[in-house]
Length: 511
Image (cartoon, rainbow, N blue to C red; front, side, top):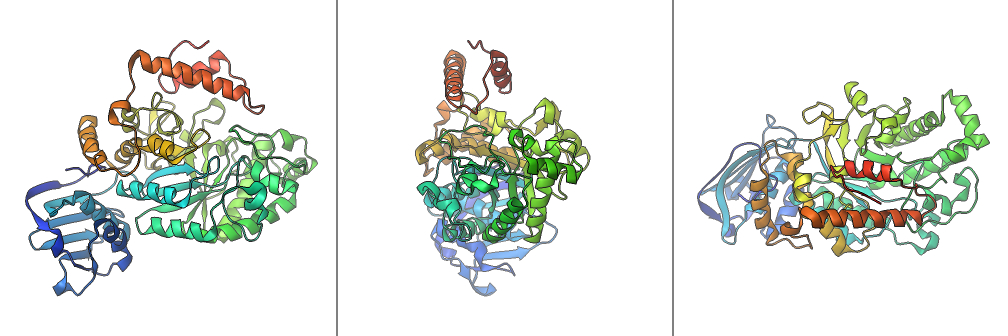
């Protein structure tokens, strides 16, 4: 069968098919009518709810099935779908649509359940803006791969992309592009009927130059800044010592949280230099009053305060693993692991204490890197790891998520080619227990024949040999030059470059 990701349970196909024209109505069996919405839009079939005796599609609620599990049967009398949840029913319909042929649906029996609860993709729309139709196109294709999380990175140093009626200067400063609140609602609703949870990210206290440009008083120095045009790590961050900072953020989160029904809200927490905090009388006083040992602890207190604001809005924070530099952490929260560094390698003990982790390893799952670094097969073979320890089956492994940071991705066609077909590989790594790359590639070739977005051909998705090594060397030299033009970027030494390449299992001479 051409299903991606490959099902984990029974998957059989029999001779014959059910004509599509016969599927004119559905008996929902207690499920809400919205579960049919995406399937109807994709298939063009009328699947309105009808009484049981008139239906050729029947739903059954089966509490014995897992949260996203489903059982799909197509036979000569119709279609039977069993699930315990709306999302399970949506995944059954997703599989049914994937199997759809011109004349109908093949006779099949599929029993399926996902490997991980969190199967995600993060899109950075702060560095470069992508309009709503592009965002929805990505959500649609990801939903067809049964990816259930769309992590929407909406603010950073370069721009603020959320309309704020309380603080309009955030989104109007500098004439930047942004999403209106009605557009955000449209995207969230579009995703929801496809089984996809939209998790917003407002990164704090670092990566906040755009916020501070609009409201300079939020920084320690309270001086005017201009949002940068390049990526990097910038030293001007939110002041954690001023009470006014917390008042502002409380009002802001109270406005933004209701736009996103998800129980999760990503607060970032990564790459926050403490240079200005160390010289700020407000931050020094706050650290002393909180009893912290260092300025990483001050970030811990800052994050705890934001977590309380989220809790008042019914949200739980998600944080990048940089926050583990401090032992002061909110409870509860979910961790997103993106990088291993000697000074913050605390993911393993965090898991040992019962923490929940989404793995987004930058050396396997960052799709802004070209295919010369993270080819299709490398993505497909990924298993959650930290410092050589395999956490595939660990109870604290919530799942995996690919990320695309858009500093070097400025248009939709480039964006699509960076994401696809690698996201097909990510989807199977997140859903399927027993993987076989050759089998996957054969199914992928079939799926790509009718894929509606731009993508990189399979033949170019696993670069090898001398040409690949030459391209890596050229790309690395370009990255060094680009970083050298940015005052806030680190100075790369040959040793740092080799350490970086080693993360991709690459070793080549760099001048």
